Image (cartoon, rainbow, N blue to C red):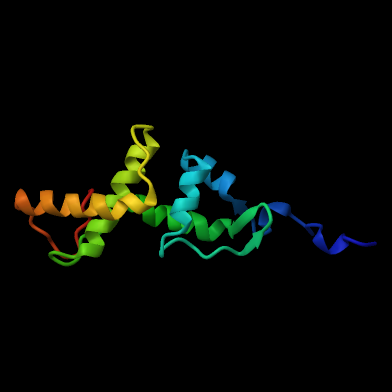
Length: 134
């Protein structure tokens, strides 16, 4: 019979699961547009497939990414602009999560530059390997 190969065999809970942006948004409490922005980050898992309705990811890979994303950003090297940009992304995520502000992805670099100025002006000490948000 056509289509039998797509039917789960055995215990369906043991089958690998896929997630679209809607499921990821619900899991994170974000809007789908914010998930699409997060999906453009270099550290976000590569999609399993891109369909007409959008991209889909393996749930296990997304869950692993979420654990890392929520654990914080490491400011690893004094003056590391990549770490400041990560901090700016986390700040944007924080504001969006709370519905305070929505910062477009093309504005993150400007936010990072401003954060860098503030961090340097107040004399922040950068400690290698220590999470900034513990």
